[in-house]
Amino acid sequence: MINDKNKRKHDIVLVAVDDYIKSAQPITSGSLNAHFQDISSATLRNELNALESMGYFKQLHTSGGRVPTALAYKEYVANILDNNKLNYANVKNVVTDYENRSVSLISTLSSLAKRLSRATNCPAVLVQHGLQNLVIENIQIIPLINKDALLLVETNAGIIDDNMSLDPSIDRASCAEAGKYLTSQFKGKTIEFLVDNINSTCLKAGAQIAEFKELIDSVANVLMAVIKTKCDISSGNPAKLLSGQTASEIDETKDVFEFLQDADKIIDAVKDNTSNVNYQVGGEESSLKGGMMLSAPIVINGVPIASLALVGPKRVDYANIAAALKFIVGQIDLKGGKK
Image 1 (cartoon, rainbow, N blue to C red):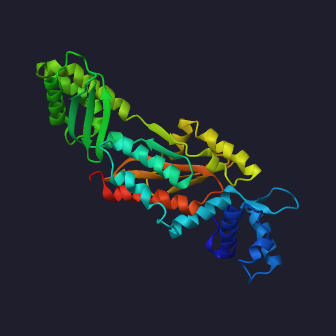
Image 2 (cartoon, rainbow, N blue to C red; image 1 turned 180 degrees about the vertical axis):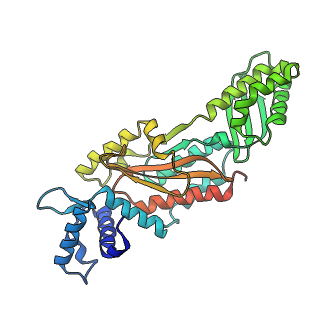
Image 3 (cartoon, rainbow, N blue to C red; image 1 turned 60 degrees about the vertical axis):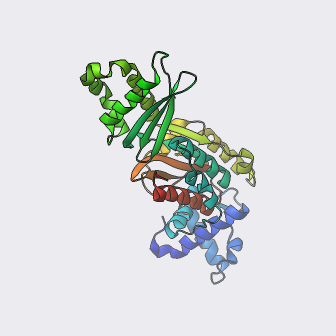
């Protein structure tokens, strides 16, 4: 980042990137004159040359203007986040899904990601990576008409639910007893603790749980699958994502679509984000290449359970996207896992 002694260079970068995002027109000393009327054109040219040598701009053609590099975009986004220049008015409706959520925590968060994608016209990514840390409050196993069962695990952040196979010989009373037993043994413990200790717990119980031991094994298998890191992608509207992009930017945006096809890359890109909004702007050495990503952790009652990210081309409305992301994760954290 540009140090405090170079405030003029910092301001030029901010104005230049903002203008380029809005117009897609190359940056020149002439285009900056209107913003810096107290600085001569010659001085602006010198500053642009210096910033180019510092890696903030590049020239596509020898005689043409400049365009921002990943370094310039990072300076711009950092300024937005640091100064909280965000407008929440146009994203408040996105939180409706959380306020009116269903019993399922996972499906609610997935729905939230879809709404966020529609609000920003950027693909949204939900990476679940902390469900194992949720604390169990109650476990129920409810038989369904088709002989399967619904597993409901009430936690300190909401309800985890999933379908599980049910042997025809298992009756409703056994399901109720299995749920009561699991609750008695693991209430106040994390889901990870249950998965790690369920075999030894059942071994000690012996004949006490003989009638529903197979059912308990099924619960453990379902929860093992639930807590595995998963990546849920809401692709948004590709046509809107490409709208207004220049020919060279469209080529770069292909990198975004390629990135979204690789769940491992996405998970790796967000796994270390545990606080605040994090931003990444692609470059040659980045898996994002021609794109950008803003991500933030989803924390409920102090437990980080997932990360929510918005992915797109470099030239996007960062203020709107950052506002949407910060507002949503902030509302979730504020409201907690209870209605």
